[in-house]
Length: 98
Image (cartoon, rainbow, N blue to C red; front, top):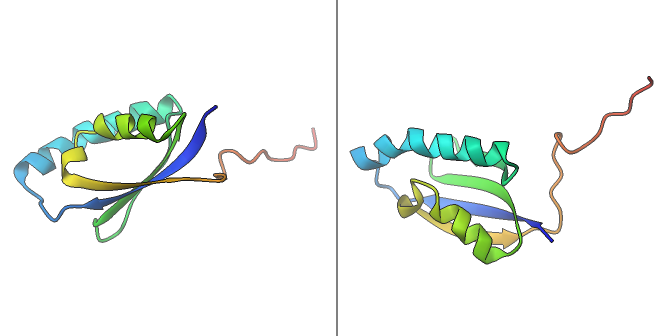
């Protein structure tokens, strides 16, 4: 049974050309994973030092496999935390009078 995990990434302070060139590829990967429902949310801090994502997975190993697919994984230090629950406005149903 899938559960949610929050992954907090510390971005290494290495903004090389290699890093910058991989950003569009990672954005495409994230978009695909979000469309498939693998990743539920993805956020970057204003100072660009941290990233967060919420992923649905069977276990921590599966989360690590998701992380390994990301183009920028070599530039990030992940910390994986299982969540008791994850609520978002996309998952809350609106009441309809119809």
